Amino acid sequence: MAVALGAVSVNLPGFTARRVECAIMSETIESPSPERRGFLKQFCAMVIGGIVGLVPAVAGLVVFFDPIRRKSQGGKMLRVTTLDALPADGVPRKFSVIASRTDAWNRFPDVPVGAVYIRRSGEKDLHVLNVTCPHAGCFVDYRADRDGFLCPCHNSLFNVDGTLKDPRSPSPRALDGLEWEIRNQNEVWVKFQNYEAGRKEKIPVA
Image (cartoon, rainbow, N blue to C red; front, side):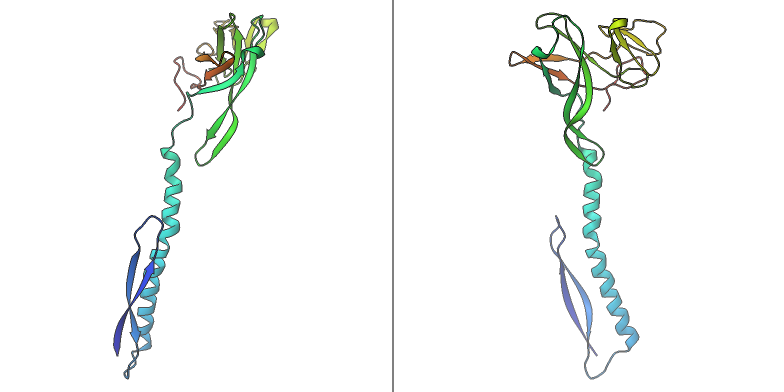
């Protein structure tokens, strides 16, 4: 019986090519036993199969850990509306905030990520509020008959400038004000950010 070494090349994405050598029986005049020949064949198959199996495993790990490296989209300046769309009488208007959203594993371009109320307090002076109630995260509604904002979930009441109107309101703080700026003479850009609900302090949501 003679033993010859055979080589098998396996390419893995992102890895240097590796050669796996395994013993392959070559028959001579003296034939090996079927048991030994079967064992060596199984051994070679297990080695090659294990290395080939690394391909989906490595790819899966890359996909799994990739979202962990992604940065949050919160706190970026986003174009929301124009000055022309805001009433001159100071009545708040609600606008959706459109941006790219990334969850644990997927990225969704140009989708609503939140909403804001914007009102004029001067020709080019604005007041921007996140629509989320700091109590439990519900969206507040502007109520002209209340001259302010009312949360439909637990009846927290806010003044038009976002401050608490009723000290008995369950909200632990005023509505969250947001930074803004005017670009190109007419565009309203807002630094959109959500904050944790149920806390007295403004803690940004990562």
